[in-house]
Image (cartoon, rainbow, N blue to C red):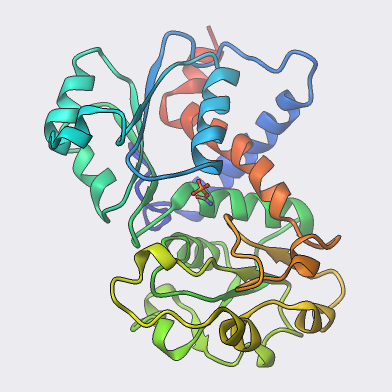
Length: 307
Ligand code: CP
C-alpha cells in the first residue's frame, strides 16, 4: 500500500510484514545505540490537529530512531488556528519537499483528503470516529507477542463502540488475522452494523468476560458525544466497566488492554488497569516499534538499508 489510512486496506500478509518488521525494530531498540540510518535524508511532518500524548510522542521518537528529519505542526500553534484550510496547509508544507505526513485530526476522512493534496506518503494517526490504524497494529503486535499467534484468539472489545475510532481499525484487523471479535457496549453506544466488521455484538459484558483471551476496554469518548446523553460514571462502571469483580472472573492467562488515555473509575478501575495481566504500558511500547516499522516500510526503508 502507498498510504496507511485504515487497516481495511491491508491483507493478512501486509499485517504480518508490519508485525515482523516491528519485531526487528524492537531488537534494534534493545541495543546500546538505538539509532539506525534507515530514513536518513527523509522529512516527515507530524501534523497533529487534535490532542495526543501516546501517538505523537511515539511517532516523534520513532522518527529520531530512524534518523528522519521531522517537523511538528500543531493545530493550535499553526495558521490552522487562523482559519487556513487543510488544502492550503498541506500544499504549503509540501513545498519543502516532504516525504511523509502523519496526521491526527478531529474529522473523519482528513487523512484520506490529505492524499489528494500531496504525493508524499500519508499515515492516519487517528481521524475523528473513523479509524486509528496505527493503534490497531500496535494492539495486534502486543497480542501476537504474548500469545504467539492471532488466529483463533477471542477478543472482547468493550465500551463506547459508537464514538470509537479504535474499533473501526482493530475489529477488521483482528478479523483479517483470524481472531474472533465480540463487541460489547451499552445499547446507546452500539454499532448499527457490527457485521461489517465480522463481529458479534452484545450488551451483556458478564456473558463474555470469562471466555475472552483479551478484554480490550475502550475509552468513553466524552469529547465526541455531540449532544448524546452521557452516562453517569458510577452507572457506566457498574454495567460496562472492568472493575475488580469482573477482573477476578477473567480466565487465566487473559489480558487486559486499553488504548489510553484511561478514564479510571469509569470504563476501567485501577485494580485491573494496574494488574499483572494489564498490558496497557506494553501497548505504548509496542507503538514505538510498530510505528517505526510502518514508516520504514512505506518510505522504502529496505532500499535505504541496502545502501
Ligand atoms: N491511544 C491514543 O491514540 O492515545 P493518544 O490520544 O494519547 O495519542
